[in-house]
Structure formats: C-alpha cells, structure tokens
Length: 222
Image (cartoon, rainbow, N blue to C red; front, side):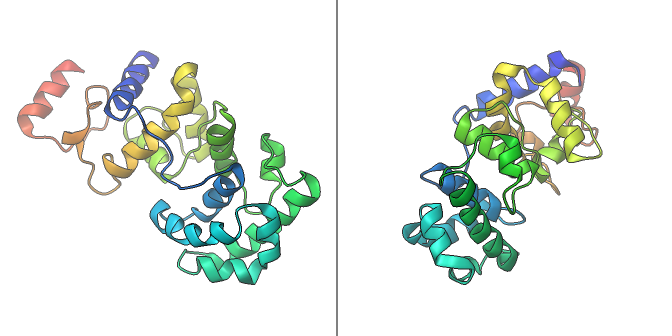
C-alpha cells in the first residue's frame, strides 16, 4: 500500500471510530501497566473482570507487593497463564518500589527491564500513559498489517516499523487504537466483516467478503 493510500486507510478508520481508546479499565499508570501485562493471551473483558476487585485492594505497587504472588494469584485465576503473571506482577511491583520510587517509568529501556514487560507492553504504556508515538503490534494489528497490505511483515517488529513508516506522525499515536479495535470487531481473523469496513477501497486483501456488486464497485475505485 502506498503512503497516500495508507493515510486514506487510517483516516477512514478514524472517521469510523473517532473516539477509540483502550478497552482496559484502569485509573492510574500502575493499573494500566498491570492490566497490559495480564492481557497477554487474554481478552480485555476477562482482564477487567479480574482487575476490578484486585485494584480495589492493590491500586499501587506498594499494596500489590504486600499482596504478594499468592495474593495476586487469588484474583487472576480466571486469566490464562495466571501463575506466571502473578509472579511477574509481584516482581515488577517490588522493582518499581526499589528502582523507580514507586512510579511507572516512561522510557522503553526501563519498562522492558520490568518482569513480564516486553516490547508490545512497553509500547502500550508509552502510548497511553505518556503520549508517545509508539505502535504496539498485537495479533490484530499484525493481521491487519499483512492482510490489507498496509505494512506487511514476517515479525511483529517488521510490521511495527512498517506502520511507523506508513502512518503520518500526527496520526500514529491514536492509530494504535483505531487499528486494534478494527481488528477486534471488523477485520476479524476467521471471517472479516468487510461490508462493515469503510476502508475497503484502499485495502489490498484479495478475498474481501463483500456482496458481488459492492466488490465490483470497490475494485473499480481502487
């Protein structure tokens, strides 16, 4: 996809969902960090269900560290990989207290040094909490980057770098939310609902799920 088409594609997603934001429920940067760590291989809905009671007793790293691994595990057993996640949340809470005065750091190096925090999690926290122009590539965004031709790549890093190159800088930060929600609700993995997508004119996916008449029209416009 050309840069001109990429801008038009992202603009169409923005117009369809202008107020897109994270579906995780949090009240401070620490809760955001913990929620994103817990969201790996889990739905936002399942994370929110678990963190609502968890954050009532542990809204900050001090309380979370005091709760400990076993205490955290009690709240998150409904989430996949809960044992490892409970351990990581306990460890990162202690590390925040010991190395960052209980504050969530804003730089990538410090974030990725925290237990359970990889590049994607760091990108989300930097984007949402600190307004950085980052692109966190999850399974939805990876699929869209490749399926539509927006930013093809064999790895998440390749797709991330492609998106950063393709998307105008002024649109990059909110584009993370436009893309992830588009992938979650419209450009789905098994059955993309192309008839609900207002960006099909620029999408290069050869197997668009559109009525034949509409598909012919889209092809003539592209």
